[in-house]
Image 1 (cartoon, rainbow, N blue to C red):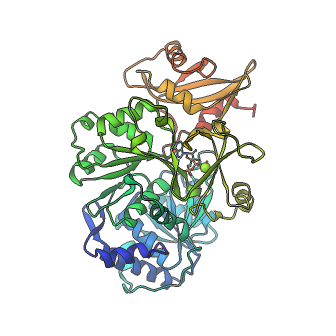
Image 2: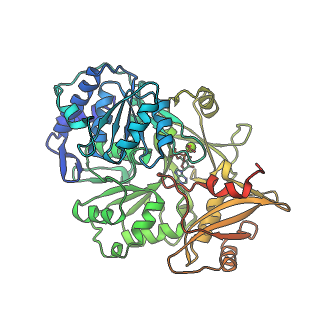
Length: 518
Ligand code: ATP
Ligand code: MG
């Protein structure tokens, strides 16, 4: 019965009008109000002259009103582009300009930034302030919304119309605008209906924590999963580790999605071992490789079900999952897997020529699913290179399938290190180094080497108060993985550069070593 993104509000407003859809800093919105508010947003966009296919941008931290904007815009056929608030002004300007957003909705922290951006752009977008704070002469979201009737505009929308233009994380280069359709967004529901998965069952008491940034699929996509399932969504303005524990205790969170870098910070809080996790049924994690030692630590501390998720912006998030039953702390090899295809998702692993390789052989992972994006906005060449005529999407990730169909991800094809003719994948080496007692964070890169072509280097952020020894770390790694994969050298840094989706920016780490050579 849900065809388009707008139906998520309509459906639950009818089924459970008084149930809480969203909670944000004490403000509770029922599904009935969510439906009315999203109608008002749709009417306001129509009144502003926006047509089906036009875009608006959102530059701000997480907020319940972001989800009202997203679903409201969808009801008018307008495409929302959320933009990461941690980006620098020129990066925000690039995306606002590239998306041609007619309106830009801005959080209080970023008004100054965006005013400067808007003044530079030729298409002069209108700025609307998400909150009264710092709004100046701009209209606020609530005033703009509430000036409109709350009747459904019933704009005719095709399921193949674009609902969201979500930019990729920009880990490997400039972010690309992935155009995600209503069909793409609803695919997760259709797939869930094909074959119900235990960990993906939701009841009326489920509470979901939305703590990852909405500018990424792990924030927006996860927020939508909760809304689709009629759960109460607790929206965290930004990721704050101690607040995550508060939400679990006070808001009785039952499901949450977090990237490994965020889980690591939460699990290391001393209070993490004192909290009652009896209401927490599942932690979903993904978006970057998780070190096995960290996963084991989380399983011990949180004691709930764990589900790994693998996917990308271009596949509307999760296409592969590792269910709780494959999380065996004794460390079976399955726990190193990204997992199995979601119902309805096809996976193959291909060589450079595009041919499937046998089980156990590493190649590039390709995905075919209802959730594959329509294409990259204004990047036809890139779209053609990414999705072939048969609908297979090349992920750029290296990996292999085992005999039982489990996918193992080995990092990006581009990040592979070739040393002395051997292919080495950073994530495997990182997992080996990570277990060293002095290591807080580690990234592994290839650096130029006259003898080996590339040599494996570990860049380590030590735990507070310790001075690790490079030789000791190398010896530790050699005891856990083959000698040729172990780092040849170790550099120490205070912290690793990461983007807002928790991914290590290896290109930044590599740059100084490769200067003038690549
Ligand atoms: P860009 O495409 O702009 O370089 P990005 O690929 O980091 O950025 P996203 O779409 O947010 O942007 O991330 C998708 C990528 O995240 C995948 O291609 C994969 O490399 C990584 N990833 C996602 N889930 C997992 C996982 N469970 N394990 C390992 N890596 C993962
Ligand atoms: Mg990518």
